[in-house]
Image (cartoon, rainbow, N blue to C red):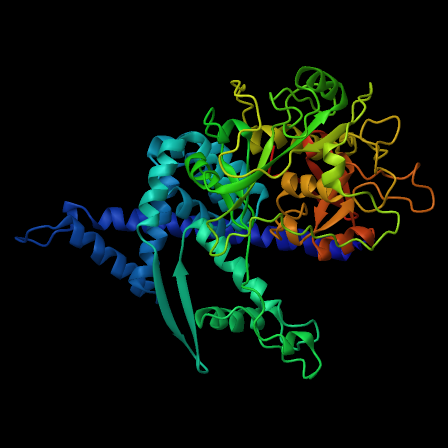
Length: 546
């Protein structure tokens, strides 16, 4: 339990942060006023000409001297001022201390090239995201908003940015340095994946931290190698003896709705470990990638789909986009997982599932077999997960029928009402399935087994994208699969079941905090997670795919 003194300290920390934010807003406003005032004809010297541009530069230099700062630093603050002028709601919230300077910098970086009209349209949505997200997740969310607002502009901006790829080096003290490489999103994900994969070729007894091994692995790759020499000191270490195994390979995992893949809509795709990509880029990558359809649909819909399309293993159930939510209404968008050859060594094999839960001798059968097996429909409302087999680039496994554009509910629309409920009475927030049974009256196959099947785990990771704790960006592939309502090993029928609507991705740290009872998690409708703790803090997190 938290003491009154600790609660007062937490309130004081928040108040100090608000005061700091408001002070930063006043500083930027004052700099903008000063440079505007100095850059007028009123200040020209008697008998001298006047150069507005030079007058503004002189004003920036004057502010820099007054602050013992640099011309560049003051210029960057002025650039933030211009961004705030285009977004009045954000400017007011910043002045009130509700948004930090770090978040304003992120907003400026991501919206700088957007048209003024677009910035004004997205003002409220970006402000809503800024109030609840840390800087890096905020940047990812802004990218999504911009892509949805104008997909053509997003593609043009990406093309311009790709033309500015570069390498820079910077000296550091103590005999060190930084090598900075600006790459495309897919190049970045592939390079990072390769470095980590080579770093993990050393055995677990290697004394170097992962960051150090990654730096060494980078040099190994630069020299054309694919294995990192192990420094465990054990002469019998297999990683030491096997000096040159097969070349390191890495998959890029990209998910997008079927309507985007078929060119029927321009909803953004999601690159694991990076964030959102525009639809055009996703379609280009999909042209050279293996892919698999993963669909979650209600059991009532499954009966209709099997009747219309049959249960052909070469075709995905739910292929016509007719899916239902756990409540029996709405649409659950399909997701396509692309393993792209845009990686330096495109491994077409399906990636190994990361399953951190302890081994269970009663584990489920191979999900690839389960995916092709017939599933008996019931009258229940729970969600079932189905998957197609892995398909080569260009393969057609779905009927070419025009799909309705499902649309993506904005973060502001999805959580605004929930936030008001939390402010008024958080006890009114009700989990979609408090018993952890997901709307089923009888457990579906695998529900009473602790470990989820590879297919179910893949669907959970595809939906969540990252750890579901607020502002945690640990990729879903590196997270553990957690039961929202705890699984009962002694009496599985009465505990939370191993089903899509009772599973979430949590990194090791946040999984431990939940297990210790310090944080509590509830899954609301639409897979929105309500996360709160004993001292009265509340947060809402949305799935990546929604």
